[in-house]
Image (cartoon, rainbow, N blue to C red; front, top):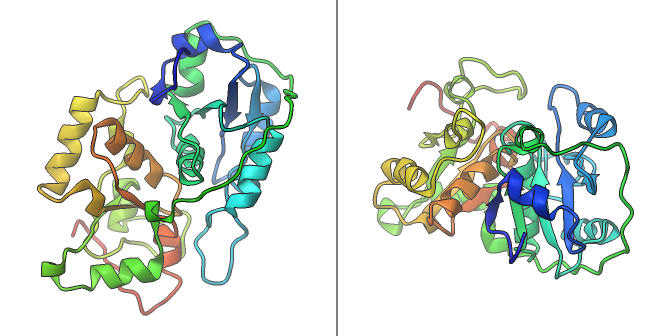
Length: 289
């Protein structure tokens, strides 16, 4: 763990440096079907020194009448909680889960949003740690409180109103390229197990997050990820790309993949599908188009 981690850290490297006093780990395991599953899994065993980061309690704000299922957290509140966990400006953070990073990427993105870029995802997650010989513990860590101030960069995300306006703009003005990270059957509207309306935002491209990973649940090489995304977005600049999913969580996986690929500057649609469908005035599409 010498130097600042960039985007990903492999399990063997983390294992060698897990005792680093400037390192903080966060276990982001979660289940949309059972919101207590992550807490139970953490209590049963987690990486040494890891805190539990709960998607609902720590990484989201309460749901409002017009929001999606996981609104962005208040940045000052998020920074205060991270400080309570011992995170300071000099701290290196590693986040992980057990589903290829699908939930841990939320904290990866949030940290960068509030101005803390010293954060990496454990490539391959909990499974890679165990395969590398890493032990689990039930011990909850206690670190000296850190002082972390949030300096949110709101150019990293877009509101529903702003996205709707950009999508409706004259094509010559440069519309965003909207990428949806959900599974194909949810994108098409064949099934919708979570939200009350099935389908996708008209004009979106479906790029399921799991296609960023190899058979072992690790990210593809930068070259393969770059090929994947440039094939989808063509000549569009990365800064014109907006990422969506069900509630603004899994979409961060595609943001990370683009960053690994050197396609920097894409934005998050934080409200995503669950917020888009709050108004019946917003159009929806089904099928592959």
